Amino acid sequence: HYLILFFANELSSETFNKIYFEFPTLLFYYHKICQSFAESRRAYHEADNQMNELEKNFSNLDLEQNKLDLDFLNVKLKELLKLALNYSKTLRYLEFYQNTIAINNHNYERKLKYLKEISKDDLNFFEDYISQEFSNFQQQINADLNYFKQGTITLNQGIASIRGLIEIDQAKRDRRMQATILAVGGGIS
Image (cartoon, rainbow, N blue to C red):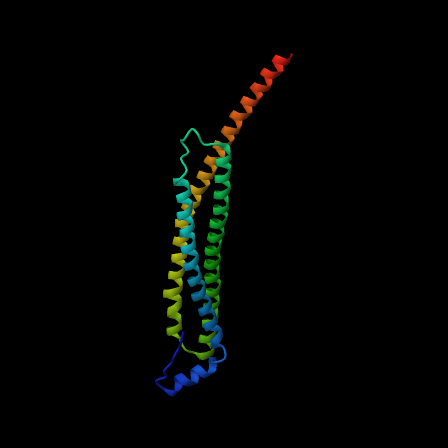
């Protein structure tokens, strides 16, 4: 980004000279906010791809099918748990970027207030960033998180369903083994 300031009169130039050495810090906070938002867009696309992958995995799995075996369900559960871990990590990154923007927004406001006091100027140009851009960034990330948290609920329910099927299948196998042991034990006695 480039920032070019044109001063209409000598007073403005003198005012800027008072805050010149403090000014880069303000731009640093601005850059951190913009960079965090750009990173949040990458995390959004990554989470969206991960959610599509999870949905594809669930749609390929027919839980009504009677011939699902325990080994297949265990493999599928391990795959889904790995995908779920990556998905939750990506959501954590989104929350991290949201917090980074909030912290640097606060720092930007604090530094701008300090610069206004030193320069005795309102610096409206720099205040516009706070009121427009930064709040839009926060709202966008918040909307993304709300959207993806619904996916987390669906994911957890799907994993719980597979675990339930594994437990049911394991219980059936245990009963058959117990019946076989009792029959063999009764035959031997």
